[in-house]
Length: 222
Image 1 (cartoon, rainbow, N blue to C red):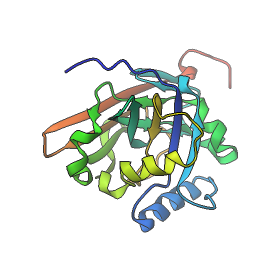
Image 2: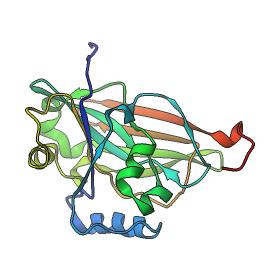
Image 3: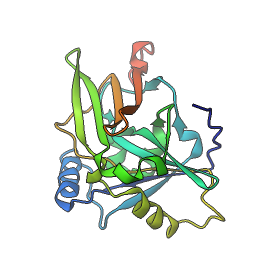
Image 4: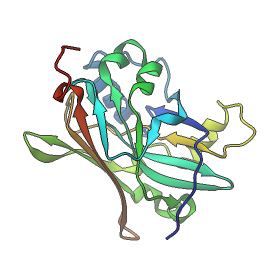
């Protein structure tokens, strides 16, 4: 193990990246149910401010509703190497109904502290398992469950990203992959956990975040 010193220069959040278009449509329908308009074409891409990526384990939120996470894989471009992390694209859903690019800046993108070299998992990429958990009625509940084979693969995603950016190189770029459909709908959870499991090498990338509403200490109505 070694410490990766990674300087974030640019960040992109991808969306609607499922390989199976039926699954993509299910995710679109899920967001439509929350009042979020469907895109004209997929995939979609949103630039995100570099300071909006964090590994914090506790983070403030405005309300105990209307903000949720999404489990994703994350690509980190470091020189000639590409690393993979587990991520959570946490978003304010009310603002997303009005302006998706602005909504992507309100809450951070969370990433795991551990990463893998992409080249070490490419040969069994589709078998990697993506899961997330939320808290419901005081219990930890599985919220998303699938395999990375359900999403656009990293090589295709990298190729597509290269066509929409004007950069001398991709060093310092962070790309969030887009997510898989959830097992049910929620509008808030006080905690969110993400895991990417490698059943071949018997290892996992994990992140866990606790959210603390400002209503816990700020007494005026927001």
